[in-house]
Amino acid sequence: MAAERRRERAEVGGFVAFARFVVCGGGVGVVASFAVAALAGRLPQVPWILVNALVTAASTLLATELHARFTFGMGGRATWRQHVQSAGSAVAAYAVTSAAVLVLHQVVARPGAVAEQAVYLSASALAGVARFAVLRLVVFARTRSTASAAARPVSVAVARAPIAAADPTGLCRAA
Image 1 (cartoon, one colour):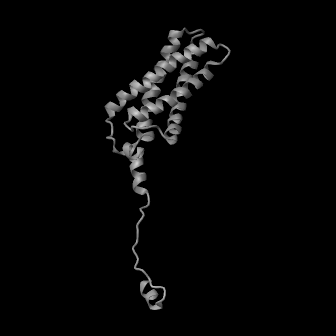
Image 2 (tube, one colour; image 1 turned 30 degrees about the vertical axis):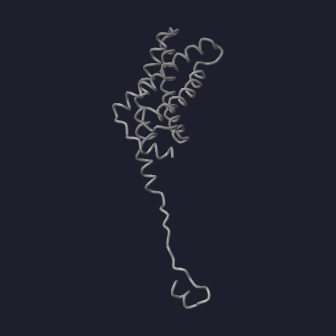
Image 3 (cartoon, one colour; image 1 turned 90 degrees about the vertical axis):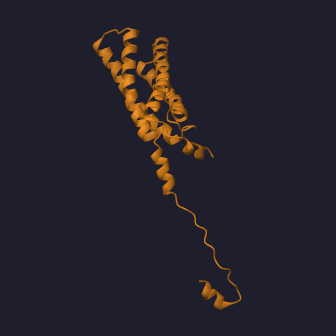
């Protein structure tokens, strides 16, 4: 029933989907960036890159659910396949944000929180545009579900004439 509801939903246009992506994904991203800064400040013994990984994992789960329900108009929960594919794009985004902040730390000896946030959010925005394309064209693409539905085997019921067990000539004609 839920799968039928998802198929019945009209496809969301590119502009609307991108606007929803910015609101949902961007909102989660901004909250995640503050969570990374807050946790890194409160847990100085934990490396920043590990804090970023944990926050990225949690925010990816939340964002994937929001994207499945609202951004791309699927109307239901994300599947395991969609979570795994979304996690793959999040790993790439994590690499981009981590590399950007690590480069900042190589260039500036002791960057302030504002500089760190600016670099982190800028890298997140660039990675977000790429993630939108991957999520729209691969993870939440509608053509895949339509194609897989068309490729399913069709069951056909065949009506056969009743065969009289006592009449051997009837067996030959029915076969």
